[in-house]
Image (cartoon, rainbow, N blue to C red; front, side):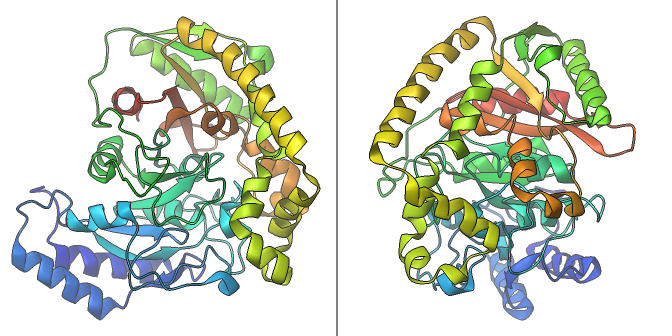
Length: 430
């Protein structure tokens, strides 16, 4: 804590960095600077005792409630004023962190690209022609650009990992139920989790440890092991896809970087084992090709039925597709998922973790504009199966591509292995 600035200095520095970054698409709502400074003054007057996040500023994805700030999910017609902060936000604020504002996102958290918002496209923190990744686009770029210390996102299909990989930062996707979803606008309620972005694994893990607590008000909250960062084991088995099953969609630099990144894991004591990823890819296809999209329809039902024009065209196309789904299709997909889950159990008898590319290909904004749905699906190749199988994951920058962009691995483990994964990620981080 001694290395952190005072709360007042931290807030002033954040607003200065935001002005220098100058991206009007980054925040949907920004707290008044004078009020934020006064809040920092009050926190500083109380001192750092009992405030482990003293001196830190954070941003919140605009589908998570913060008292005094509107929640819109990037849809102005959906906007409401929450009376209280989300359970997780309240815990972080009680620990001394100061919320700067609400960040842009793919509308209703539907997308992995970060371009489906009426508020524009947040600028990628590394290269302006690249997509920021989504749906937690603003939260990831706010961290990547150095404006805030950490940020909250959400993750249903990879929204807490793809933006991390696209912006060269850490993205922690906790086990479902570790962080309360109270005060979060659902996308797929059975799969959603609040996620954490930071520039280091240590900070992401610290924030997760403070945010984590059982919440009686959240039906999906669970009592799980502490996510506090664990020590690195002397040896561990890492499952990787065989070369013939690796999918990079023509991005040779991503392919080469992945090979180098897993070799780095081996240098840290990992035993690399090739496993059949086809069952996992089959699970991934269920998320958007199966009836789980109906959960997105349920979350937006009053608005989509009464005011479909309020939706981004691509978002409407995706969520509106649920109208043709039936209960029969839902049960058939649930049975298929159960079969695939049973098949995948053999993986965890053979390996301790999986290590996959976070982003199979670094797409540009122009490429996604030309083919918005197919390229979005490509981005979910190594993320979509995680939530459906109730797994924990953390995305971490490990090396560099030939073009200088950071390369990123996602480490995946069974539910409750959050601290173990964080320890391994910290060792692998560049």
